[in-house]
Image 1 (cartoon, rainbow, N blue to C red):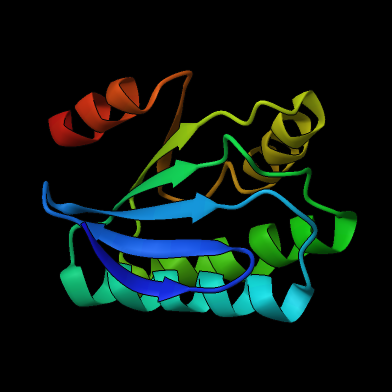
Image 2: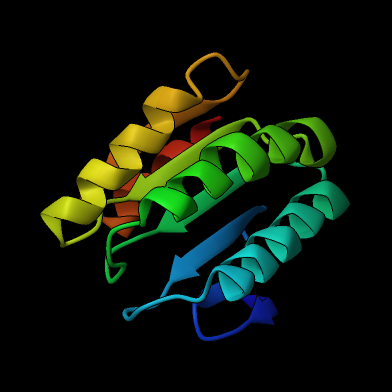
Length: 132
């Protein structure tokens, strides 16, 4: 695995199996740091052209309402348009409120041409991404 970008919010990396990874760290986030991480993830997906992303939310705290808007109204539409994003495998957060915040985001973007699946384990998520 090769790290593409990392800050206090998380890490964007390239997996040797042919997809990108977005790993959220535990702790509070500054919106500008979240925006930077998401922007670098968009560039990584666009550069590689595979359209597949494993999102590891296991340690993530819930998105704030402003972060939900950022992800749903700015980042995900841009990821689809500029990054060619098509398949997202989400390893679910341990925090139930983080799971609910993610579900709210996914509901808001249900009309985008992408497919999301949720998994309890990383191995399940990887297997699904490799089958897409």
